[in-house]
Image (cartoon, rainbow, N blue to C red):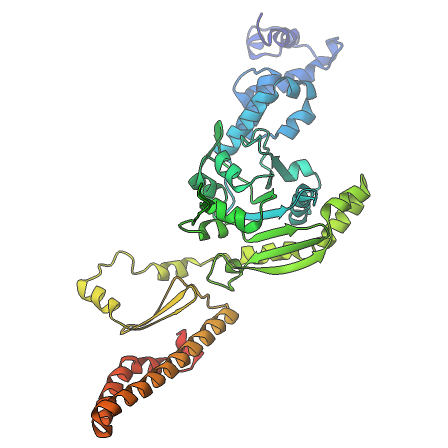
Length: 457
């Protein structure tokens, strides 16, 4: 009686159990047992399952166990037993999500891509083509990407594909789906944390390496909306506190029109700007992803060929962006943080604040202090020659501009003093004043001059 009783009876026929042999019963050969099924195979499988699962489990429970604890995919379950898969689909989906959240690690880096354009320009088709371009070795779309529509943000059915496609998501629908900005930014973090995030009706841990979002919202409206910019009831634009938060999460934007595709790249990600909101056109090509699919129908090979023509060089661009992520060695990290924890005295604090000169160039603020050169809100990587030259040229131009302004001011002061005090008195006063002013930045000219290497030393 009970589960497994039949196989217990079959096993008894040969008297092969340890108990039967201790009782001195005759051991029968397998050939002496007549049956209409492979009973030996069944017995061996049961023994293996007992070792694997710690006891006798039904076929259904074995499948659920494999999904929950051993990482079996939903696709593998369906291919193994369609009927069992169909009867237990909801449980299998939940168990698969639980395995992903509990046992799988998030990627070290994640890249987010936004695809925008009007209706009928092929945003969904373009999103799938981008995913295939990034993972050409994954032939089956089911293994490659998981699509989430506005009515499905529970990730139910997700099978840990490397790409998530969020179709037709405006800024406000994303914020609603992920329960607010803080949670949303975790999902789109370029350096994701190994933790769960809340979505409607559940919590999940996204383990995908790529997010592709598409909608009809223009790129600026979408990104500003994610950051919190909106129009109030009076029609006034309420600015976001920090727009860069959303811009920093989308290094690449596709803008689709009827017969053109424009690809924008955030210059911050390729070390060409300190401004995280600055995008420039990487490539503009003629084409329409939707028309390709419509023209070639079921001819998958031809369709993918022309899609790849539109995306020529795109995979290399993504690799370049990922390669620009800082990868310091242990020694470099130790050098970077070697003074952490050291106490800062009041005298040191005061010295740091003693500014001689300050120049603002865009988002870069240069402070010339008694301790040397400081740059706030601007990171200039040593290997970025182009950016270093650009900043240095701007510095020299600004410095010359200030020198000319100073000379002009001196001339005006000279005229005033000449009129009031006479030539001799003015000459004395002007000479004294000029010495004081020049002394303030004298160290600057001496230390940095017009040499780029000294400037960045």
